Image: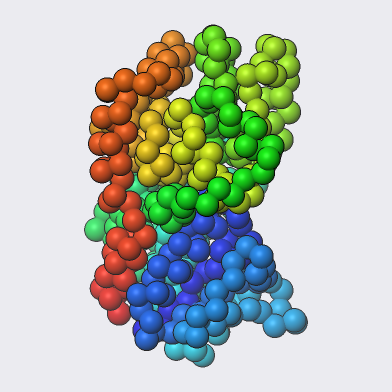
Length: 364
């Protein structure tokens, strides 16, 4: 097969969609070693993604082509000239007017479910691209059953066209490396027990709700790791106004091994997000053998399984109760950790790649 991946996110996004793109590209190409792959991207950043397999080539616009036009439509000429069998859009979109067989991965439609968290222009662009991709792609990959339901409800797509294929997380969380790769500052911060928040600092992630819980629990510490957006100013104001400076720390972690180390040394992960298309930190926490707390929304129960700790959505007392439940050792805590570790084994790159490859073969 000759397969082209939309690799813009793989080369230029260090978090969610970038991680997914890199995971799919590496896992699929490592299995299909005799097949030819093309990574289409306007820009290449080898500091983020550097792949050198002989069966992979980079596909870029020439210096005279508009990058946006090339990615959204102009690339079709290269796809036809190269006799590409499958184009896989890894982040909610495929080129306009595409004639090549195509698959699109839809991560979420939260911009339709929660429009207040997105500006008007972004919502319109995301909606047009996602609707077009779902309508014209030969197959759709949804990263959860929840996202599959949303695709059907919002875009009126036949469910037979949609295949749910779960994501995995970076292998560093699974392989549990022993090398201690962290700064002296980080080492100092991990000396005392703490709970962990991982995620970008934006309104939808609901961090202030977690801070309100921390405010009401004596002698507890929270470490936060994530990209700081504009919403961080409100978070910082809340921390100062409520005297939480000594209870809450933000760490700038750009190394996945460091992050994995922080997970393993925490008392547990709290993931208070209002909604997600999946929720990678949940499986990172389960692989790290720590308890996971998240809300009782269906998407989080789908990912977190039976033995994670769930609080009633937007119920502060419920969240406080669950944090207190994981803070101290107990037989129940240990049993839940072990059962979650067994459950999370279904979220692997190998399984993800096998299902994607099977889908490729169905459409050619």
